[in-house]
Amino acid sequence: MPLGVRIFLVYFLFVGLAGWFVLSTVMDEIRPGVRQSTEETLVDTANLLAEILRDEVKAGSLSQSRLPELLKAYGKRQPQAQIWDIKKSSVNHRIYVTDDKGIVLLDSTEQALGRDYSHWNDVYLTLRGQYGARSTREDPQDDDSSVMYVAAPIKDGERIIGVVSVAKPNKTLQPYIERSQRRLAWLGAGLIGLGLLIGGILSWWLSGSLRKLTRYAQAVSEGRRAELPELRGGELTQLAQAVQKMRTELEGKAYVEQYVHTLTHELKSPLAAIRGAAELLEGEMPAEQRQRFVGNIASEGERLQQLIERLLNLALVEQRQGLEEHVAIDLHELAEGLLQGQAARIESIGLRVENLIAPGLSVMGERFLLRQALANLLDNALDFTPAGGLLRFTAEPQGGHVRVSLFNQGEAIPEYALARLTERFYSLPRPRSGRKSTGLGLNFVQEVAGLHGGSLQLANVDEGVEASLLLPRD
Image (cartoon, rainbow, N blue to C red; front, side, top):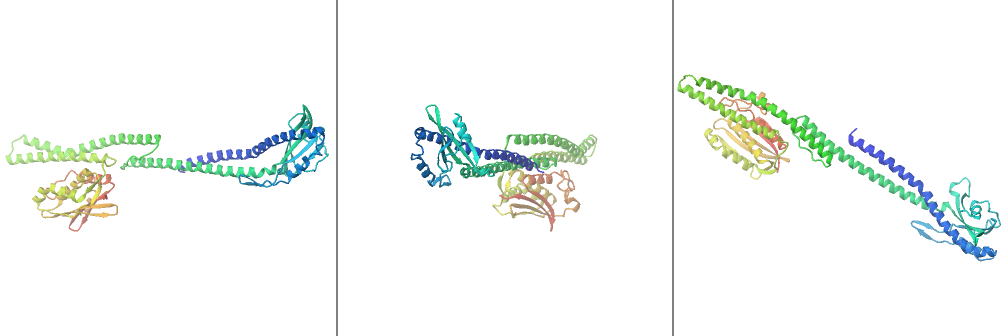
């Protein structure tokens, strides 16, 4: 299972359980919270009524007062109140008054007049100077039929002469409880969803960064060229930089060892030739023979110089992971400059030259490296083109790339050599001299093409050979 998925699942489990626990706890607290608030209001109402009824109860004229009519009229009122999005169209309070013995003197429902309520907690506790309240089901089998009763003492000085109780059915509170629960459920689900979305984005970002770093590490382990990925985040950036530093140090050590071994091997042949010629020159010999050995020393010395210079150039591009500049390069102008630089050599062989690249056709890249790469291709083509032969530069767009080709008239490349021409130090004998080159030129061109995100192709065509570079278009 991918790391990002595992991180998200752990996050999902944590957020889901935490959200469910908090939400269920708060949902469970809504009902008692609403009832506590309602009870507090009933306490105030009961105490207000106790003060209003005190004189009538004290005088024993409660039944002859206007209060029974007022309570009856109160029970018939239709307030038509809009409380948030809940409509209230009737009053729900029940009010009854008892004397100091618990006998009902007044009942807004007119159902309990004369009954003994002294055994009910609201009356019983209040007559004893305590806080009187109770909750009683109207239907013993129905939890939603419970009614809250809150009582307040009616006092004559310090003596309790009666009790007034105010009752409210809990089912009248249910719409408000359900509304709060619905809103809280939607809000909680939204917050949990938002939390999971953030967790998903975080997991995607983290796994994406790790995938980039993994691909980079795989490319390094396979010896492929790769640029250090751009990562956001302190620890990930530090990790990427640490991998890059480790890569540079390990590759640098291996690269030096490889080059020392290669250079030692390649230097043996010219050094042996120089040493042999020098030993022969110590003895007596005809002037013509001496001149030939001096020429051998000079040519082998030139070969050593070319070998060292090309090794240095190749090392330059092989150790780079990207281009130092991305500029538009006019291919016609670049090819024309290279041909002008080789004009003397071209004229000495009597070659025909064609620059068929359309003016203004450009590619993106590093000018110095592309010039060096095309210069190597041109130098190679000059070596294998017979006197009076044809050299031709062409270029054509291919999607987001441009294919730059150099054709040289001459013998076809042997099939066994085609696949090896870009190998380091592999070379074919030159037709005019019979000698091999350093075998580093085409390898250099291939490295430059790879740095530009392109490729090098060598192929036999009608009447000659064609080398093509595929480069990104401007």
